[in-house]
Image (cartoon, rainbow, N blue to C red):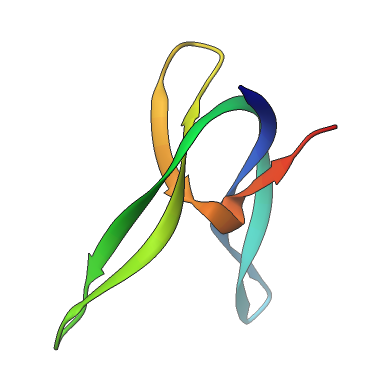
Length: 71
């Protein structure tokens, strides 16, 4: 299993500006890649995901843009 660093986006506000900030959540093991979907008003949109195992044993299915491979 490859080690990855995984991220989440949080909503942040500074002054009168609101933006998304990418925050590291630490390391995890990449188990596999997968697919998830989001229901839109007129159809379902699919996107690629990474299935990761956290140090506490929890499994997460997150968008692939939220991981970075470690050397």
